[in-house]
Image (cartoon, rainbow, N blue to C red):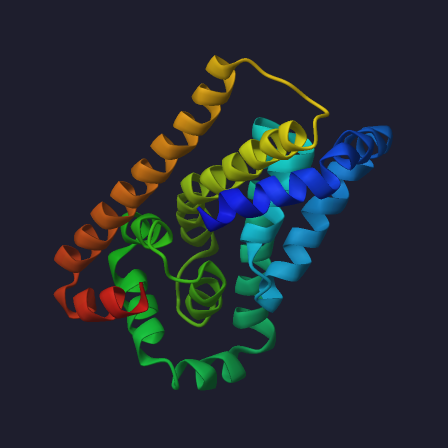
Length: 224
């Protein structure tokens, strides 16, 4: 409810500016999406939440293009974290992990269990950046690592969808766009369904991880 109220207030204040911003971005052509990909790839390893970029992408680029942009950027960020942790700051990352035994235990289990475990791991609420850094200190192969990162896609899609819906709501609140009640219902119902599904998938992933490695059950629950 707080998020919906924020969107409505933002729409009344800035809703009329969104079409202008969209037009300016469209005028950039290829460079607009590329710029966001680079920003996501470089900012996320610094622990800037990719949720911010996902919501912005949904508002400015729409659902499909926004999701593709953020996924590419997030995968680039994951690769950067892996490379930094494996080849540049491995000792420092390992030292930091010694202060975070739960993340270290999760990374060790991921190394033992392989690809399926890593995909499930990406579906949990654990920080994807922390997981990427942690896996970089293990002997996980890069191919396994990058395939496991595909598990971030459902969460990113929901975040971009929220931005997409928020953009429409802001335009409506700013009286710069109008849609039928059916269109509005489908948008918000779709968001509700996405949220329910991601919660369900997250719980199933946590349960599967706990069953695969019972020692992680407490750690996953507390981190979530």
